[in-house]
Length: 86
Image (cartoon, rainbow, N blue to C red; front, side, top):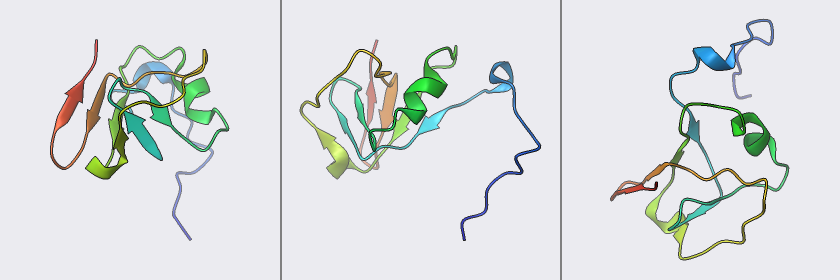
């Protein structure tokens, strides 16, 4: 029973000001581990707003496998620090 926005209210990509992206895990280079369906990668591929990952510190690992279609986070925010990537 998680409430979701009405499907009749589509938001244009150019109207988005902030993108916070969840993940199963993130690495110290800004890469994200999701559930493997590519939903966020497809959504983010043409966005001008830099994506920000939101995670607990225990979700940060040294390195994750990376694929060509993966979109890298520009920042990852945890309860202990903010990691920034160029």
